[in-house]
Image 1 (spheres, rainbow, N blue to C red):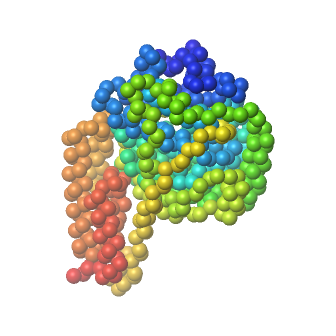
Image 2: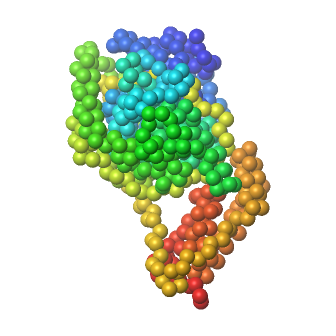
Image 3: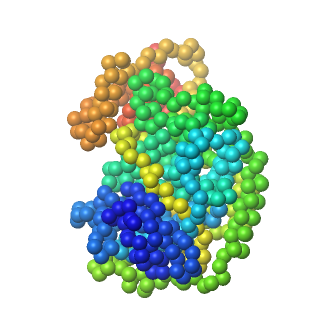
Length: 534
């Protein structure tokens, strides 16, 4: 029995894969349990079907709802294929692994190995919290897997309890990478349905994908550990933003303040650091965060475990020859007049300012060597994004039960990574001078009336992101604040100007005028010639 009129019916055949049932469904696609009749095993199949712009036709093909959605649909399809090709290169026992990906039915399908167990979200609903030792054993392999993913210039973007699956032996596997889904949300203006409240950091509520990095995944994993240790989920990042703006106080209760039994204070403090509201205030790499958690010494042991597990999996692989999905086979399955769907993925991966060196993950030996040598620390700061409307739904129902072993798949090349963007440098500290040795008294930029008016505007934009009048009012107010900041810079009041920048940064972190003001302050300090007293 299917769970959606858009789902393929049980018994439907894709090449030698026979659909058995729906495992999960979200806004970006449907995941099925299927039978691989070629190797006589169960697999999980994820189908690209963005419900906001596409529907299932009677002949099982997928088509855009209207011609106006055609470009968005094709763009998302390319992203889906590109992400699957990238995932196929990862080889880690705790990261979802892809067997194959191919286009058919005017859409695309990602084939993964099916595993039995349950999602962490079900465990937490049943038990509420986990003891420290059990949570440690859960998190350690996930940290190692994420470190490998980040080293390859990729991020997960959707870490949460439903996407962490526990096998029968208790070992975890991280599922359902959200990069393609989030990129699609940016183009369709449905970002709030593509992120998970409580587990998505503030920078994910913006269309600036390059603002995200390892610190984004650290937030998601920290939020998951917070839920497992304390029994409560962290508040929505948008709610945290509004509270900080209106009251100056964060609504997140620190884990150290909740004092869950059995956890060391230093570990709880590291958890809170991973949940820092500002992206630049979080640990910038898994390696750095693992050190705060006190688990660095165990990483070397984990590397050996990864290698042993991979060796066992290879030894257990079936000796039956795996058929290769050829271009001719794919073409035969495509509907007429749908040549565009059969083209290879061409979407360029997003530029990642945090990605220093592209790493091709090709063998367990290379991974072990890389990890033992120490992961490069990514110390680049990233600003956070503009708040989006309140999330109305989560994707907890989309929790495919999957893992994968890559065997004899067609050669798939990963698109060449773009050069890393230059990292913004921190603002240099001003040298003390006779005029500045005494700390000047700083005054706030926003009055109580300003804060109330801004909160009202934000509520209107939360209800309707396309409210032109509210957007105009916000823009006008920001313009006035920026003029005051620029005036302070011209007067040489750099500390005051910087304080005002930090005060209104939460309103519009991507505002170009704000960036110019920051640069102006930086230049004045580099000159070392403040104009105070002129």
